[in-house]
Length: 467
Image 1 (cartoon, rainbow, N blue to C red):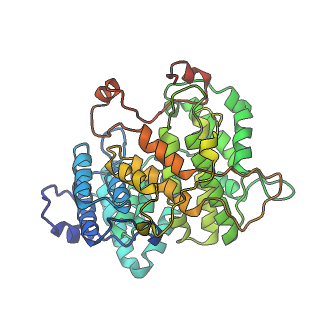
Image 2: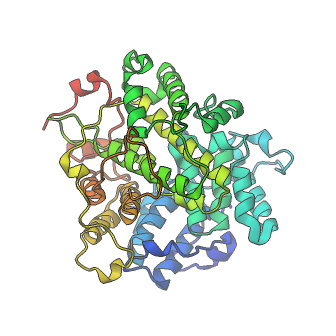
Image 3: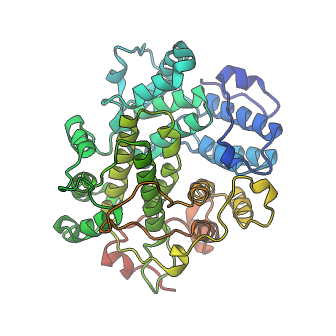
């Protein structure tokens, strides 16, 4: 893997990396996606694989290059823009490491967990495992991801291993899936207690009422906000690094994720996915207090971008694992909500109005669809997360997210409609920071970035600018 000598005319990298990209879902085809752009996307993903490490600094920040590349590619970016995205990301990445002098096997692969120096060893191991599986490689990959020893790592790091694995499944790329499994294994665990085997089994089983329908996510957010653990949580400017806050948040998420039931039926899983995506989107767009400048939260944003991949996972899994992945994603969403103070939601008419410009799968023939303007701005954005957010919100619009074949009791409070286009529009209009320039210079220029703070706490708003 440690090969950093390739230029832009070198297509041999594709074979060196064994890089392939299958077709993205048909519903996500857009103008601009053709064999030329696909060829360039494959070449650039191969270069990333060969040239760069999984983290881009010594603090465990994740390499986002193929996330950025594949998101703009699937939104219709031209080949020139794909190269620009590669060149921008390359400047901040670490070179790939040489393998350690260890032989990772199916018998000992757990012995090197959380050792990032073993990343290339893990990649080689998982490539061998997936190659040996032949056409059954997705099943083998999922078996590893759902191994109780691996799964807690996969749901860590604000979903980054989960997202990387999702890209590999979406584009049917064994190489990307191998890197995702390797990234998972060298990760540290964010929620050790919540994803310990017996606790997570309880979460999946649930603690439901006599009618066995549980609470809705909107009701759960209300209860979390009123819980003494939330009310008494101290304030921190960096809550995710405060162990007392993260411990309390993990306890809250464990307690309340048990109350959200997921039926073991295809219709039930689909309905609960729609509910989860809608609620995550509402939280994303609704945590700015009235009278203050609009903010979009970095951690909540990752809840949105990761939710995009849930249907891709669901297509590969048994019904039992479908329930497991939904419950796991929900638990991490609730922990993220709690860490940042269980903020009140201020759902404006703009956010909850019907999306009158609902996306259609054959958008190529719908030249007046306002989503095309948003896609163009997302492609041009030099924030590596903006196109991923837009893509996730577009999935909500494609689903329109709330028709459901599952009936709910009258006391099960469903989320209101979501104006997916509005949320996508405020994303491209608000975030104008570049991931690749000096942050202090951009702040002086008045550029807007994601918010990281404890937005559910009054003290956060003491120093946040008003409109």
